[in-house]
Image (cartoon, rainbow, N blue to C red):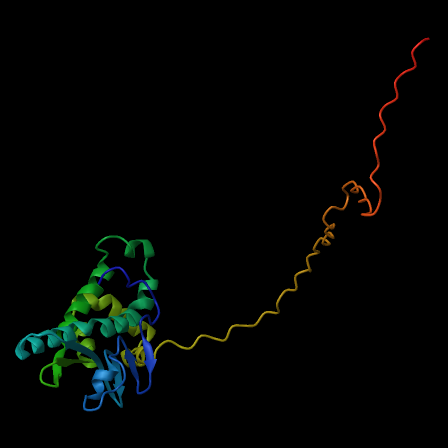
Length: 243
């Protein structure tokens, strides 16, 4: 859990309709399945109710009671992702006011406090529903945790007092932070289109004309016509001797 509290932003949150941020949805709805299976793990805003939900599933050749246990444990563990996204958005501005080098030290009190708070909050979740698919081929479990339970846990913890003081001074509303995380990150502004820079055309060297084969070589001797008589070689004259 430690190590990424200083990373601000709504990381890992996918905005969807109905006020729910998903963390690994199970895919599209399947006929006969509850809608929470397709919705997956995330933050659910339904009217005035604000809840963290975790979905777990188990598929194996185990007996049905064991499959249910595995799915329920996975659902409770899945609550960590949405709860941590909320706490990061809530505590991020406060952490930015502290010495960043101090926060990066081992066992930094603010980071340890957030780790322990997250662990306690996840344990407050409870299994709300279990769905068995087919003849026990797969089991899905749904865990829920109310936002109010997380806020009450924060107020009852003495080590969270510095964060609560900052929230009171800055007028931070946990409900507004939850709604922002559930809605997902704001869309990025469209990028400005810059005119393409015209690069000067590169001058290509003129292609050299290829000389025909044999050009530049000494001309070959002309062939003698076929009907021409053969030229007889004259013997070399002998030098005149003295008489």
